[in-house]
Length: 330
Image 1 (tube, rainbow, N blue to C red):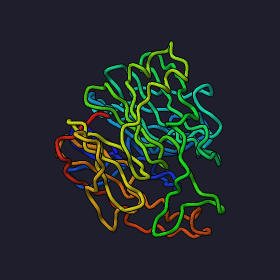
Image 2: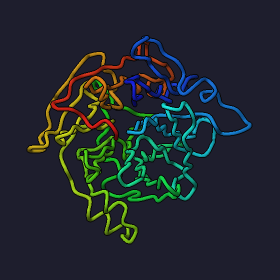
Image 3: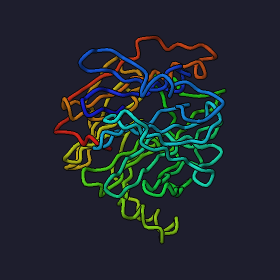
């Protein structure tokens, strides 16, 4: 989820369910919803690729720009980042992810918008087109030049662990094979010093200095050595962070949000709700001081339930107060 300067909520409908409207804006004052940025951008066509195909990751920056990460799989188009300026209501820029930046099994899932260093840092889960997560990676995009670099592919910190997602006693599996998802949740601290990330299926959050990520003289082995194990965690989707460095994560298996405390890196249950089915992205809205989290119901989709879609409307969005003010532009 992301937010306009006025505090309106902008969110992606999970592509797992093939929504007609990929991205939606919820007007906080009028309490109405509309396609974002408009209907045309939510309408695929053969003449060009100036539309949203398969969006999950979405972030806003301090300049009023909503950045949408289009995985591109649904309509076989080049993956891209689309920036829409909510102050001018115009396209800001498109950044493409060329073949050198993606693998055949890429699924660019979420990203950090680092305006201090002028880069996007993307978590690629590695489960696109039937992938098993073994090519999960990070992707860096230079905001000035559009140049891309693929980092840490298939390394210890981007690969999924063999810890299947188990919900209500049932492992999440496709055709009898457990779904294991690589690098997924990603965020950065208030000063853009540290990048935090984690595979969805895994027991650890990792962190690395963004300066090290951007050091192009490091070979992969050297960069890997500089990545620290930060804390324990459950299987999780999205990550967010507050001004004091506490990390909030979506605990998929327990319908909850957990928090990793900065003071001692201990993990605690923070928010729980029986309707928080597959909590996914979590983001801070500076306009009202709440963190927002979506309940995507992914585990109830037909591919995990013998061809029967068990997901049911409404798809809830929850909000909660963090321990201290969150970091709004990540």
